[in-house]
Image 1 (cartoon, helix red, strand yellow):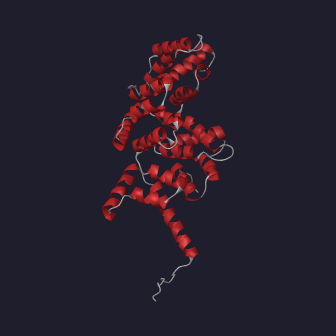
Image 2 (tube, rainbow, N blue to C red):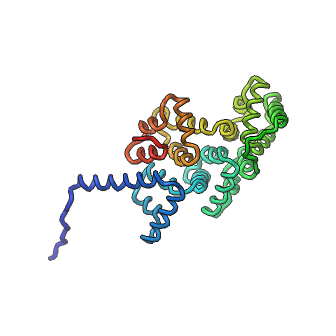
Image 3 (cartoon, rainbow, N blue to C red):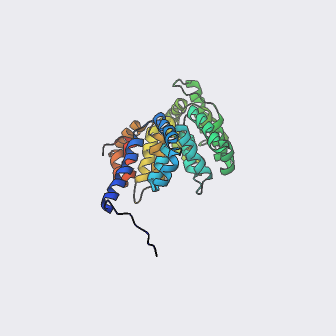
Length: 309
């Protein structure tokens, strides 16, 4: 009767654990410090050398929040936005707030590129998924926002600013009920600089902020979309600093939001978000992330935000 021979153990379990830890740390250190073009080249080289997909390997080797963060990071900016929105609109858990946040915080040029990535990756148009998953005025606003060309420069027409502010007042606070169509038309067709100027003029003219008017006159996801548009028109870094603060405030951490914002904004405006976070909450963003996360997941996020740890 033959017996199976077991190869001798050359290292201790402690040494194995240490080696595995170092291996994961290497993944974190390498990928977190490479830009989108470098990550694309790494994936090409990996495929050429090993006839395998690096993201597939990472998916099998990593787990939990670290896995989600790393896999999302492996994509370029439009690819990340496409993945976030697609998962939010058609995943196991529908998250219309996440989809709305991404869509309504992006510039017109960013939206056009991520719409193309969306179709290439998933074989369906973004508008189709929006149409299928969202109702009413929220749907109308999102569809208009992703399809209406908008100027991205700093110049504004002061006469048009005054007219829009007055039209919004007439459509909301001045009347009984709300003319949602006017809000949709102005919020989805004007530049960020123009909307910021409208907000400023509205406050001076009516002794009430446009943001408060939106809160008073609208509700639900439609309200959330309008607020996202106006807040990002005025100061996107402040907006995302607040989103991150809410994700880490109180008991427990909203890791889905934490990963989404850190990974998607790192190559856009993270330095400004960090400055706004410290200014508004009297604590470094890196310090907050450090206290709310652990292990390689913590190291990866801290590397992305540029926090020494």
